[in-house]
Length: 85
Length: 175
Image (cartoon, rainbow over all chains, first blue to last red; front, side, top):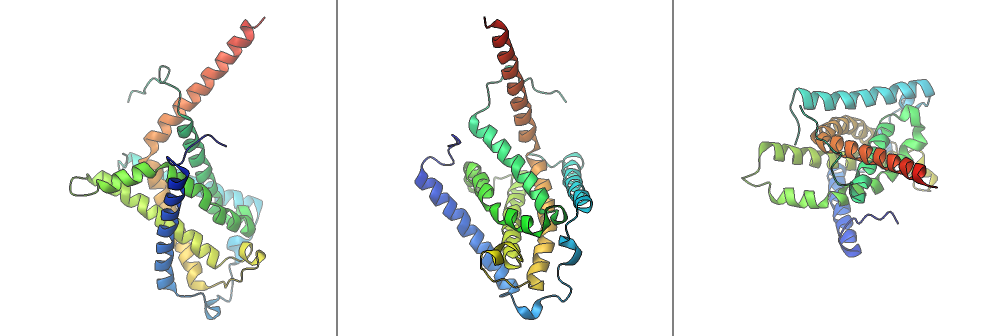
């Protein structure tokens, strides 16, 4: 369809995908071991509040802010920390 | 620093161009995920869950690197190689934690599918805290691979420009 092979064969692509999902499941088990099952007794009274309150301008500001933060992180890492391959 | 001349370089493989666009899409989706005020809670959750597909594709395209580097992480590996591998492992762990904890405290997407969720404070705090880890590791991942991104973008842009010129030449030469 897109003309790109993700693995030498479909079976290998499936096997590798299963390995990735298994690694993800392992990480999930670790978080579950730390947090435990979700409980109604731990529902915060105030809820998610303004964090998810949609708004175009605050949203754009948030988007630009995060984009700038990532760009700054890349710049600092490459320029001063000499992070590169 | 001298820039390489890509004019004589062979055209990029389709796989490389696909990997570049996949990475661009992943970065854009990541930024959108980190800005729920822009996307709203519904899109935030749907994008978060759907992100599994391009992520798995990204890992499949990088499979050879993942396996080869893991095999060479022993005594002979450089600090840079180990650091890079640690960044990538942390990025994978952070991404999984974000997706899973986001699904656990889902308030729109999963309930709409009939899956009951609980807005658990501890899981939400995990989701919130790891989004910061994710931001740092994404920036480090991008910094580590900037050389590849830079080279591929330049070669891709050049080949697109060249194709355009060739098309114009062909159009002019056509009777």
